Length: 118
Image (cartoon, rainbow, N blue to C red; front, side, top):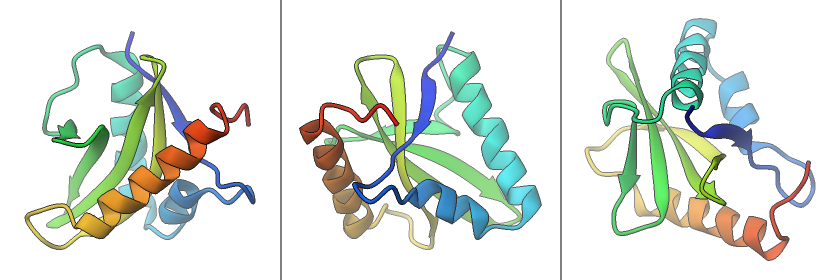
């Protein structure tokens, strides 16, 4: 069994990942859903779909579709819960620092509240 996938919500109950998914065409959202299910169902997910962004404690869900690159950043909480922070379309080889900083900020907020039970 893999990780339990959860969507981060801000203190005002906005869900950046849901907003991102809602902005995408259906076929892309379906593939993202398939990759998230893969993460839940298996213990060792191929790096093609899921990898740690060293040296940060941030993980990247990776989706390539029709020549575009989609990413959802996340972190692992209590060894079994994957908390998805936000998504973006990746246009460069390297993950932009501002996206990593956003994920780290969401993680700090989440942890400062003891992991929301929403």
